[in-house]
Image 1 (cartoon, helix red, strand yellow):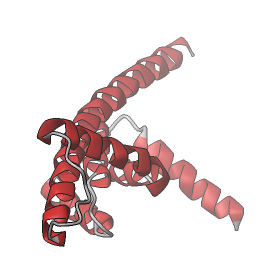
Image 2 (cartoon, helix red, strand yellow):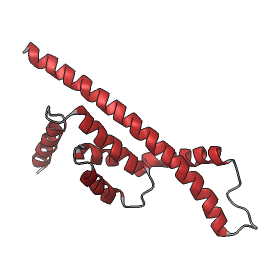
Image 3 (cartoon, one colour):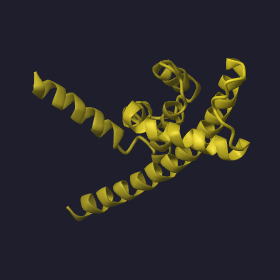
Image 4 (cartoon, one colour):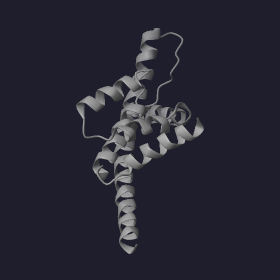
Length: 151
């Protein structure tokens, strides 16, 4: 049973690293997956991933969903804290809780800071992931090609 899953995982990895998948395809899949995973999608991450696969058919599907695994809730907690800090820096510091203010005003002040900061982080991390994954794939393929030419 374990052998079956190991072989399935190995074949998926080989498909992921195969020559007929371009570094751009893998990198764009990882970048789109990162963008979706970093945004606070409240349980719609997989649905948005499936929608992204329809919109961007050339994006590598395995890279897109591997990004969801990487950006799990544990890694997102510090990112969400940074999102609020960035939004707070953009909009100026205001206390989140005031006793004489309506609750909707509090929600508005908090959410705009959080969402703007999160959107900035999502774009920046997606661009960074794209550049890193594409570079790693180029280096990996170059090394693999030089090894195969020596044999």
